[in-house]
Image (cartoon, rainbow over all chains, first blue to last red; front, side, top):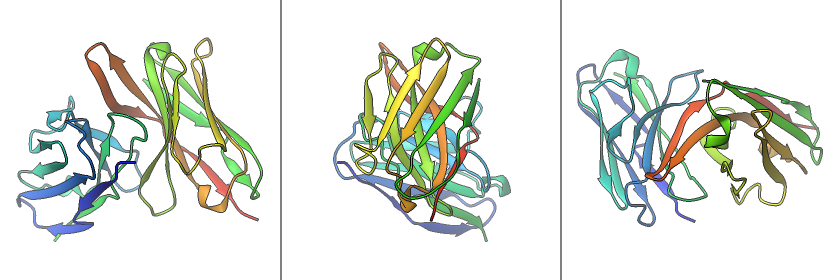
Length: 107
Length: 120
């Protein structure tokens, strides 16, 4: 099975900073990569699909890139409401494995 | 779109439990449906998915113990969980996934989750 590895596991940044989270697949998955945001005590929310397509209603400060095995989620200017754990997920075929998550905090 | 899970609770190891997910606000039969779980304080863990045609997939950790099914006439998704283990303790979310001729998309709507606790 394909493994999904995120880095870093946790991250502390200041408001206004540019933040980048990476996700690596152990085998190529084309662009079948999604990013989710889960705020404390809340249900996961889809941010990005097809590696770089922003889900409707998601702020434009979020962006995604990559293809094959290496992917990134970027927040161009960190806002206080972006405090959350972020997960990548492969969805080309079962099992639809998630990365282990990246916990983002405000410094 | 609404997804409402039910059937969670406290069970002992090796017992069984069936979760349900009642869907509304969309054409249920046109969507694949998935179960994702989250152990307390841990990350998201994909469990199982079923297509509109009934084709299903499972995580290795639940294969042979869990069975996903759906009743399109009742707009309801199920997860039959047998031989439960302590490590199955988690909040179980149902979520929908759209597939078309252009391809498949990830999980765009999630329920609020149902807590399953396996403990002696």
